[in-house]
Image (cartoon, rainbow, N blue to C red; front, side, top):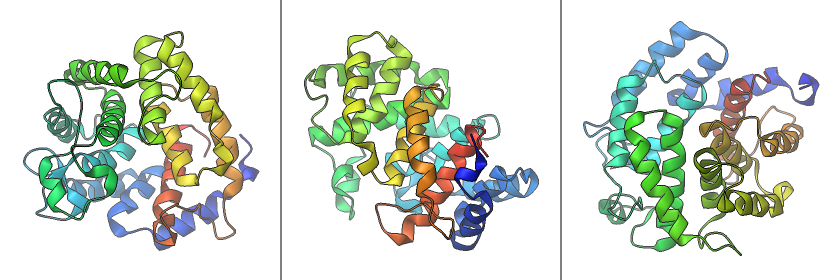
Length: 275
């Protein structure tokens, strides 16, 4: 990959100047400043609740939620820090597994409905259950924890029952791009859902998706061991030229979240050995 496609130094400066302090340890890992990175990470891991989850919106004292837990640990997995956080990751995985229902679906703890949660976080809706199951089994596969194996398979069986061969899932598109890499990894490229899922993913007008969503698509493939998949390369070629003059990549959620999106881009570039 030609590094002239993007400006690494500008991206680093933007993240260094704009990213919240709680996320800056990731920048130190990207720059191979391990001693400082590990010291800062140790402080952040104190946020983990006793049940293994991460508090809602990273607010100390809040209930553990699946979304916050996955969001907190996902970049650590992408940076290949499994061994460094093995004990904390074990607890997080056990928390997530504990949220799975008998029929294989995952959804947030019901207490989340008492909070000002996002539409996709609320419980009791099939579209949300499909979405939550897809992102959870994708993360669990990326955790490389053996205790998650049965849970991943049960989640796949749930999604299999909800699959429509014409349109995929009756859920958000995120469910498709999180689940299909798991189907490919666990059931092969030739599996009927894997094959049809790839077709549906290829119908997405990727140029119209925000960079924050495109990064998420790449992360979903990396978690499942498919970082060399041709769709990853295709998305990378779309993302890199989108860098703004000041070094940032933009978020669909507004300028406030541009530092997080930019940091996420740098994390995947580090993982893919493009930096």
